Image 1 (spheres, rainbow over the protein chains, first blue to last red):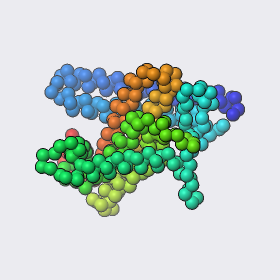
Image 2: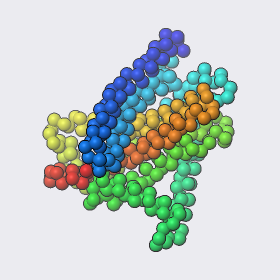
Image 3: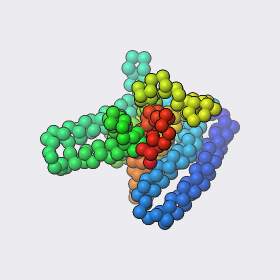
Image 4: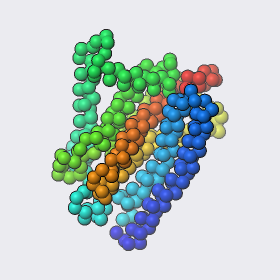
Amino acid sequence: MDPIVAAASVLAAALAVGLASIGPGIGQGNAAAQAVEGIARQPEAEGKIRGTLLLSLAFMEALTIYGLVVALVLLFANPFA
Amino acid sequence: MDTLHLLDTFNLLPFAELEVGHHLYWHLGNLKVHGQVFITSWFVIAVLILASLAATRSIQRIPTGMQNLMEYALEFIRDLARTQIGEKEYRAWVPFVGTLFLFIFLSNWSGALIPWRIIKLPEGELAAPTSDINTTVAFALLTSLAYFYAGFKKKGLGYFGNYVQPEPIMLPFKIIEDFTKPLSLSFRLFGNILADELVVAVLVLLVPLFVPLPVMVLGLFTSAIQALIFATLASAYIGEAMEDHGHEGEGHEEHS
């Protein structure tokens, strides 16, 4: 592999995961904060809130995973190698 | 994904290896298939069939043991389908959603719980079937087919009316959505399971004992959640395709 391409791929992989985790991090924080607020206000709804929260957290996590997939492709299946 | 290469640095370490993209290829006619995925899928299928046979061999009025477990699983899946699809239509879709859920759940857990490494293959290694993109893409495309079928069966050509609900300006987004749905479904499952296995593999590579355990437990948790997510989303898409826009509000109450 061309060293420049290799260096660029490694950098790009790191950026892909790093940048992709910012947004979902903020989103998950917001969602968890709202869920805690909801439980504090209405403790009897805890089960429902927890289920919905876990589901939506997994949705947000998927966004980071897309970045991870791009990073893995760059590292293990680089089309420019 | 076929040409995934091994990171050479990992290969130099003696006590553990990280294998990505080495597959056991079987040649069927002109097709090249990933053999290790087939072996683990067959194992999962065999476990599911044996479990259902054991559960239904002698059905008791008061369930015990295996029958109890399977009835619990069935009720769980039925509730899932009912909340997403709605009281009226969910019955016909319980088998589809249940198959998806049970197979994905068992595949994910088989990758984490069964020490596949004991079995040596000439090339590649056994892992969860869902950590191969072909498996997850197949599931996602099946889900697409299922929700188109559900929509057309319920409404006929009127299904295309969905594309211009609530506003005609939504048309391009709705068309794009038809492509992004299977894409996100397949990538989400594939990425999560592969990430789990890679994280565990990397940690085992660094510290072989005890340290990877918490991450493995976390992996079990995320694997179960991912199976649940896939089944929930599949039934939500099916429910959405069958939703009646003629009577506003009626369909939405069932979704809560």
